[in-house]
Image (cartoon, rainbow, N blue to C red; front, side):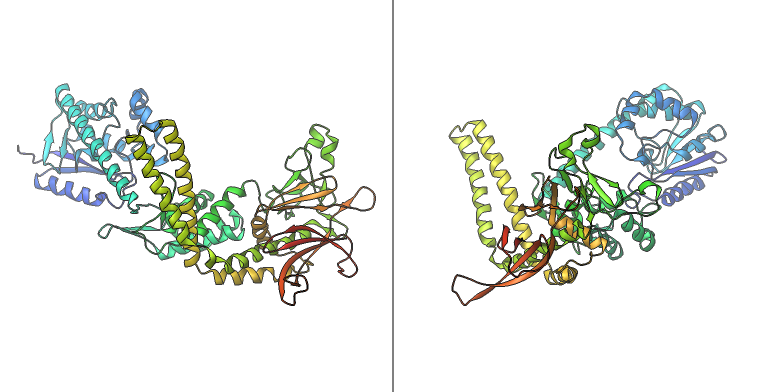
Length: 581
C-alpha cells in the first residue's frame, strides 16, 4: 500500500434502523476507523454518524432530495415503507459530504454502512460514488482493509455490479431466514419485539421485563374493568412514563399492546389456531384476559362509557353508559342523546325524515321515580350467577372428549388426502370438506385452550371481587360507580331496542326479553322497578327437597310480592326473570 502519511480523511458511521442492539455500535465503528487512520498517518478532518437509519436513504441535502426525486425505483421503495424512521434522509451524511473537497479519503467500517441499493434498478450507488469521483475522494472499507479510487465511470460500473451481487445474496439469505423462522414458529417457538419482551440469544428464550410486564398487566386489567383510554393513559404517563419507548405512551400504545398475543405466551398459526409457545416464560396475562380485552376494545368504538364533549357549552360532563346500546324499534338506527331537562335519547330519523313511527322510540333516562339505569343495574347479577354456575360446572367439561373429537377430525383430514390421491376424489368436494374440517378443528382447539386456561387460572380471587361489586345492587337504590357500571353493562347487555310499548333487552348470552313501558302523566312513559332476590323452591311438586333459584324481579307499581301474580319473562339454568303486575 502506498504511503498515505499526511493525507486527510472524513469518517462516517451508521447503525441500521431497528437494530440498535444487534448491529455494531456507532462507537465501535468510529474507533476502528480512527485506528486505521492513525496506522497510516492520515489526519481526521471530521467524524459523522447516523444512528437508527436505513442504508437505502439519500443524504439530507438539496442535491440529495433532488436526485431522490428522479430515482423512480427509490421513490417506489420509499412509498412502500410504513415507519417514519425508514423514510427520513441521512442528516449527518449530508454534513460529511460538505467536507469532500477538503479530504482525500471517505472512511467507513464497511461499504454497507455507506449505502445499499433498495433495488438493482435504483440509482443510489451511482449518486454516492459520483459524489466521491467529482471530488477525487477514495472510498476506504476498513473491515476489508481496501481502498477504492473512484477515477472513472468504469470504477463506478464495477461497484454497481458488486452492489447488485451483494443484494442478490442478501435476498437469498432473507428468504432462507424466513423459511427457518416459519418452521420454528410451527413448532411453537416464537420471536417477538413486543413492549417489554427480552430475547435470550444464547438459550433462544423469550421473557418479559418485570417492570414493563406490570405496566402491561395494568393496561389489560384497566380495559377489562371498563376504564376509559384517557384514564389509562393518565396513569401510564404518570407512573410508567420512564418505560415509554418514545416521549410518552399514546392511545396507539394501548391498542398495540392489547392486540399482541405474545403477552399470553401464545401465538396464532397460519390457519388461525392458537399455539402454546414453548420458549416463552413469565407471560404477563393469560389467554382469557387477552380475549376479553380484545372483545372490549373492538366494541368500545361504538359503546363509549363516557361523554367526550360538553353539552351546550356547559363544563359538566354527563355519565352516558347507554350510548351505543339503544336502538330504534322502528328503523333499527342507534339513538342519539340530547339534554332536554335531563338526558333523553331519540332517533335522528324523527328530524331527518319526519318519521312519526321513530318518535315512539324516544326515551328519557329519568322519568319521575323511574330510572332506566337503575332498572338495568339489576341485570348485572346475571354476570355473577353465570360465573358461579360455570364455576360449579367447570369440572363437568370433558376435555378428553374434546381431544378425541380433535383427533378424529385430524384423521378425517388425512383420509381426505388419501381419497384425493388414490381414489380420484372430486377436487371441489375435497376443498369443501377440507374447509369444513379446518373450521371445526380451529373451534375445537380454541375450546380446549379455554378449558385448559380456566383450569390453570386463579378464578377464586376474580369470583370474590365480582361478588363484592354486586353486593350493592340487590335493591337497586343507588348506582354503582361509573367504571363498575360500564364494565358490568358491557358483560351483560348486547343492545336495548326501544319499542312503542316496551323495551326489548338483548343479553350477551343470547337471551332476550321485553319489559313493558308504563304510561305516566301526559304522554310520558316510565319503566318498571327492579329487585334482585333468591327464592327457596321445591325441586318437584309436593317435594320437601328445596333448591335456590336466582331471580330478577320487575315491578310495574310497588316492590311488594304479596297478593300479586308474576309472569316469567326468561327462564335459564342459572337465573330467571319475572314481571310482577
